[in-house]
Length: 140
Image 1 (cartoon, rainbow, N blue to C red):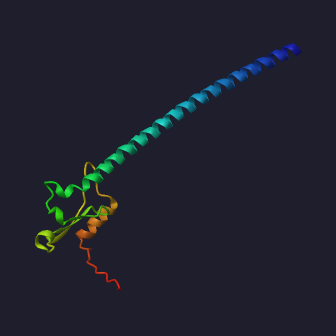
Image 2: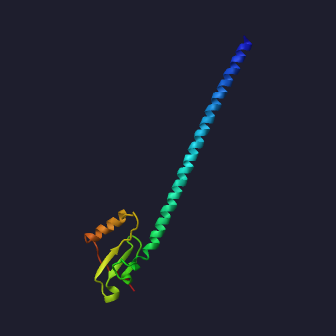
Image 3: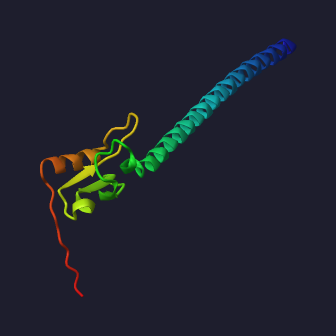
């Protein structure tokens, strides 16, 4: 009887060890799949970041040449680059006539880019006339 119980105990222990090993192997496979998915998503994010960075850098470089493009409707000498929150302020007529006929805010966009929230708020302020001229006097 004791031998029978010992054999049952050994078989039960072996079965339990086999089940635990199988479960451990399945978890390891899931962990590897998850790790591979995380690595793939991370690499995809990095590639997207590189694409966006290149696009942004190219756009920023092109911004500096816009006044010299054939379809730019103002004298390039009248355009002053700011970059942020608007790309250019054009003082139309300043170089030619030594007086400003018009002040134009120019935002340069390429591809599918749209105005940011900040740029839209600036455009709105200009369009509704919330624009002032301020002279700051500095004590000497």
